[in-house]
Length: 169
Image (cartoon, rainbow, N blue to C red; front, side, top):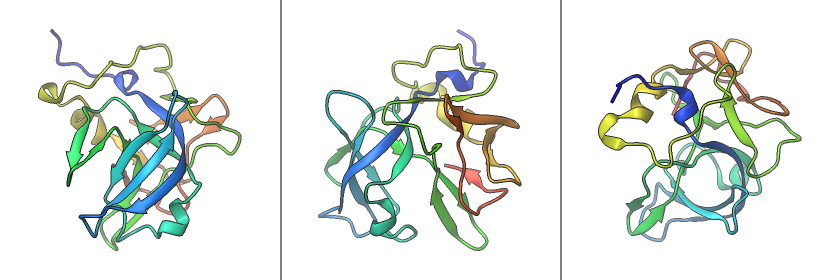
């Protein structure tokens, strides 16, 4: 088995947050129900309470990484992750914005890597996400990129509002 990783291994999709609430047992976590184009919404737990107001998350379209291994966070199973631009100085976090006409379930890809097949589930032992994540950044014109290649849907590029140069986590 090769240790070479490709962004096509990531199952990234447009999601629409259909409901959101504070986690009952954790002050810093939201529990979201997100429509990613499947039979029913996925439960996603995200640590965004301190940085993104609940009003900004309600009914929002986001980018979801869908093929992480499900993990329990304070007793609630999270079935993916909301991808966000994140800067440290000053501390700021913004969920990534899909193109306006994108809909729940639309495939999100890195340009030049559209044809690869996403892994069913990322192998945590091989640290696929960790190896790819270090190269995910926001360009100077606010476009999400991996190694300088735009991240997009069939409707256009994925952006963030104001965090040029930030990492994507």
